[in-house]
Image (cartoon, rainbow, N blue to C red; front, side):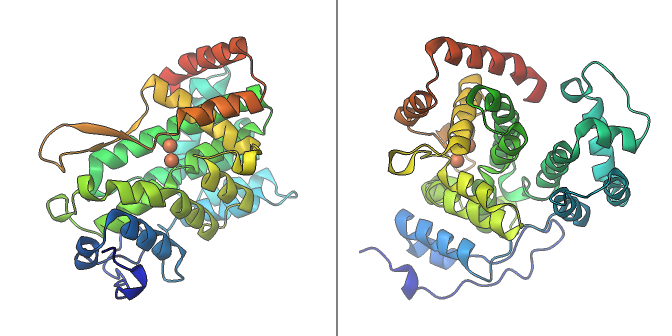
Length: 322
Ligand SMILES: [Fe+2]
Ligand SMILES: [Fe+2]
């Protein structure tokens, strides 16, 4: 008989989680063992939506830049001033502005002001959030390898979404952010399962992956809302595996769906160790039904030639971002 999530005790609050700012609230191992995969997925979703759940804490400077980026009157000097308070973010912004992807062949930047000017306000916001996600979200000693595939997949899908945006006429900067965040729920779910444990003590993913996968869409949307990111972004995250609710395509979710398809074709797949650490059998996960990819292509009225051009552009971009 399936266990009722309502009948289970409330989760223990993981007050012991600290340092990484990895979020709080957890499900006890006893409860996990009692629940079947569907019930555990529901329990995870309930947890993500509970007022007790706190997503990983983003660096203060990233939160401030996120807030400033929504202010139409923000000045460059304000952004530079905030960035100057966080040497790690500052270094990441400077390096990114000088990378082949952003420099446009102009090479080095001499000052932080120059780097910020080169990236633009929303470009800066995206790079800062990318760095913040890498520093605070895509990491846990318990599931290091799996988290690394999620991190890499998310970064590649972010860049692929930015590139795909011009083929499907959505905003490239918002597409980047949607791609970056689309699987935040997978990372957040891993952090809940890990609950600060060491690799040896963490529950086996082969047992819990199906629940994690089922919960990641709702979990990711909840995390995006709790970080104060736009509601449109939460909607995109919630639709990224089924971008045409009621037969009507959500353009941004469709863009991420195509971008994810390209990323997976090129090798940036999410995989997990199906042996629970005992061997090297990797299972693919986070896969969109191929029928949806056709639905999205048709809804955007993309021709075979345009799809081929998109794939060629993805192939050229991949080595720069993978
Ligand atoms: Fe994904
Ligand atoms: Fe996903």
